[in-house]
Image (cartoon, rainbow, N blue to C red; front, side, top):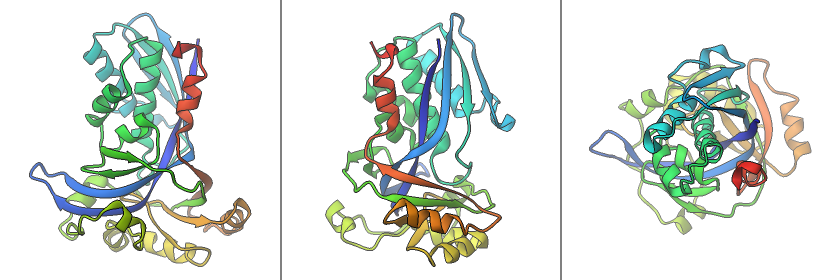
Amino acid sequence: MTLSLPAVAKLNLFLHITGRRDDGYHNLQTLFQLLDVGDELHFSPRPDNQLNLQCNDLSLQGPDNLIIKAGRLLQQHTGCMLGCDIVLDKKLPMGGGLGGGSSDAATTLLALNALWQLKLSTEQLAALGLQLGADVPLFVRGFSAFAEGVGEKLVPVQLPEKTYLVVTPPCHISTAEIFQHPDLIRNSPSLSLDTLFNSPWRNDCQPLVEQLQPIVAITLQWLVEYAPCRMTGTGASVFAEFPDAASAQHALAHLPASCRGFIAKGVNQSPVMAALADTEFNA
C-alpha cells in the first residue's frame, strides 16, 4: 500500500522586504505562484514508529531532511505510534529559491495525516508546517497566494496560468546568508495588494545575489534576450514568462551548458490536493 504525491515548486513573482523583526526574521510582501512541476514522494506506512527516507540524491537521506522532521513533528504532536517508508524522487534543484524542501515537508504532512488517519485540519497542519519553515504553510494550503509576515499570512489569489521557463545557474545560495547580509534591501514600503499588482515587479534579494554570485547576473542577461526575467526567492533560480510553451521551448533549446532548466505552467491550486482527494486514504 503506497501513496504517491507530488511536491510542487513555487515562484516569487515579486518579493519585497519591508523590515527586520526583533526576532531576526524579516517581514515581507510576496506573490507566490505555484507550478505544475516538482518532486515526487512515495509513502508506504508501517506499523512501528520508524521513519525511513530513500532518495535518488544520497546527500538528502539524513535525519536533518525536512521530510523526516515533518514526520517526527506529526508523531510528537499527535502521539501517533505509526511510521512510514518514504521514497523521494528529487527533481527540483536545491538552493534555487523554488521551495523544494518546504514543499517536500508539506506533502509529507498532508500524506501522513491521511495515511495515519490523524484527521488534522489544514490549518493545524499549516501551523505545524510553520515550525519547519516559513514557506511550508503555502504548500500545505495548496493555493497560489499573496503573502505577508514572514510569508505565512496568505491570501488566495487567482492568477493567469502562464507558461514559465525556470533556469538554475551552477551555484547554491544560502537563504540564511542572504537574510543576514548587511547589504540586503530591508526598507521597501508596505503597499496594498492593488498597488502592488499595478506596480513593476521586482525581487529585493536580487541585487545582493547578483553581487555575491555574478553567474546569476550573467544568467539573467542571457534570459532577458528572450523575455523579461527576474530571480525567485533568494535564488539562484531565475525565471521568465512566455506566451506559450513553444516560445519557452525555443529559449530552453539555447540554454547555457552550465545551467539547468525546465518549462512549467503556473497553477492556482496545487496538484497535490487533487491527487490526495483522489485516493482511498482520504476517506
